[in-house]
Amino acid sequence: MAAKDVLGARGESIAADHLTRRGLRVLDRNWRGPSGELDLVLQDPASREVVVAEVKTRAGVAFGHPFEAITAAKLARLRRLAGEWCDAHPELAGAHPRVRIDAVAVIAPRDRPAVIEHLRGIF
Image 1 (cartoon, rainbow, N blue to C red):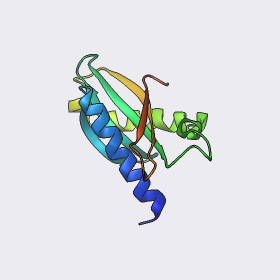
Image 2 (cartoon, helix red, strand yellow):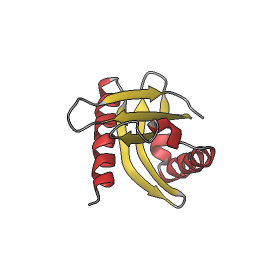
Image 3 (tube, rainbow, N blue to C red):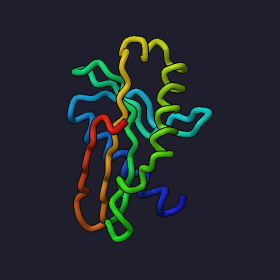
């Protein structure tokens, strides 16, 4: 596995832990649909929303902040994928009539604890 893939998987685990500590429940990880892949799909019991979380991980910010990698095209793909996920999981999506797209940035240097930023409802 390439170093960037290892870092990405680590970031997704850190993000999933962070979000579950805040009350969300993981429904799916690395779900693949016709339009691509969703990093995390969660349930927010407080708002009764299905939450699609895009996780971007970097070891540092020398090449920009992780959120800078979320382009308009990426947002459009996430929206399509959220619909595909709901179509594939009507029993879960039907119980949560609203879908929210969040972004999670994880800056995870090897020698220091990770820094996590969570933006709710980016699209």
